[in-house]
Length: 81
Image (cartoon, rainbow, N blue to C red; front, side):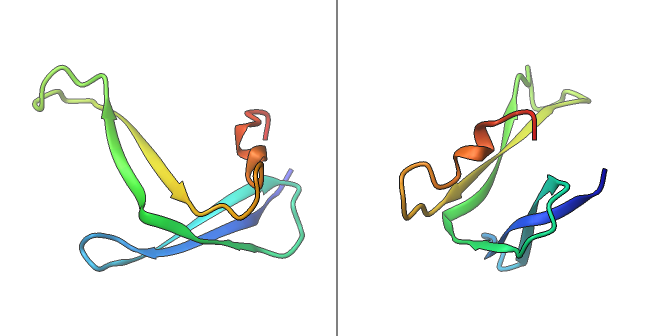
């Protein structure tokens, strides 16, 4: 199955670089929904690192979004997509 862009977040990081984050959905062919990020829209987080010298670090990203209505992005919680 093909994936299509469902959501798009454009923002500037703390270094002033323009970043585009596209969220894909399986079999999606509709129009792209533009979303607005919070102050620190995309923030990396290192999980489980014992020291700063570990060769492999588990990395995750926290995404901050502005929400107009309750449950607007509830589908992000569905791990099957």
